[in-house]
Image 1 (cartoon, rainbow, N blue to C red):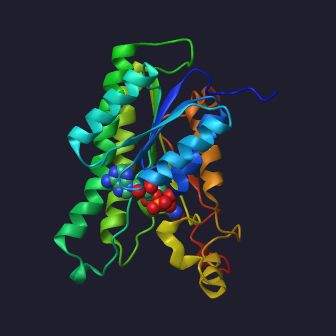
Image 2: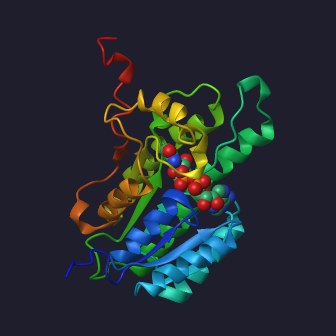
Length: 267
Ligand code: NAD
């Protein structure tokens, strides 16, 4: 039988009623973690995922919270901790795009993306760190707690037409590293994942037709689009003690998208 690497631990995965977050929640549950499916609007999808995890012998609850709302985030942690006893793993996954050229971009859409993609990670990480320190070390992990921040290849690749999104992910990179530096001595392990083009609803236009998919494949040296499971496998490993000496690092899960693919034929 497969050893469950996260047995006895609990995890909050933000924005896990779809896409990459859903896949991570399912993967962590398979590894033995009790998981919180956080959603902001998709209640039915969240409860369906909870049912699916329970059907397969896992433990899960769904909690509604807007990660950019301070009170929602505090309430989510309270409910999660009162249900599972503590939280050992936070996956800051929730994120949105609101694309427009810079002169067409409203202040509202600039702020919304920064609020959810960056401030949301701050609010959730702050609560997680407080809980890790309150609880102290347990025998379930070498670390006091783990935080995984969902970034993007656009933390390093500039993205015309998406200045709000790329700024938020550039911010996530420095947020993750500064936090890792600050809380490492407490044995709180902080890392990020930077996905490339993963097939989810956030980027449906890039894989909806063969022509669109072909165009994006030119940007991926490994020559295939990513699946949510590709990211989930890395998240499970990063949450486990197998990666205990990985701290303050971003792991690119992108089929080589960040390798300047324009230079593949000598530039
Ligand atoms: P998705 O749209 O399926 O997932 C985003 C999730 O965040 C959704 O479940 C959504 O409901 C949730 N969410 C949005 N606003 C929220 C809020 N205020 N509070 C709580 N939850 C909220 O898309 P995805 O591709 O699975 O994206 C997940 C993460 O991965 C995002 O941070 C995204 O930026 C990042 N990412 C995705 C790709 C990709 O190619 N799909 C590439 C790089 C990075």
